Image (cartoon, rainbow, N blue to C red):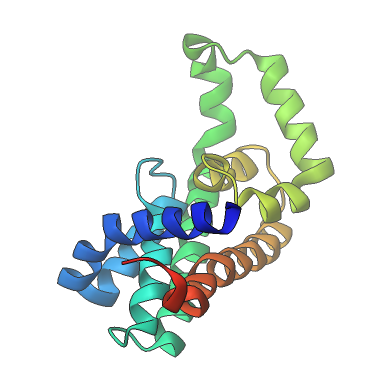
Length: 177
């Protein structure tokens, strides 16, 4: 029962993203995963990577290109968000946060939280919407060091792509059309 639900969910994701990937190919995979990881919350990251893995199993994309490309796009998108968050985030939150209900003590708590737990948040955050899209901004704004962010974000991107894209590739024969 649970497996049927999961495979049906994958089929729905594939159905949503396949037309875009069939029309625009690997550049669409890269662009959509980059912009999603760079903070565009409505970008269809899971649908894109699941469809890309499925289409690779069907022979549309070479799996040895599409999965590393997806990992690179997700990683670089996170780095771009980190850069923007580091450059503008902390100051902007302190200056303008009150207009959206974010007070300086909240900014300080986030800052402390990322210094203490940043690595696991960044790693596991890849699997949680909208944290995946916002973690780069949050880590940059909280002044988490770039090196630990870069390492844990890349590891999270690799695991996320392998779980969703690799999983769709391996399960392609079981996914209903």
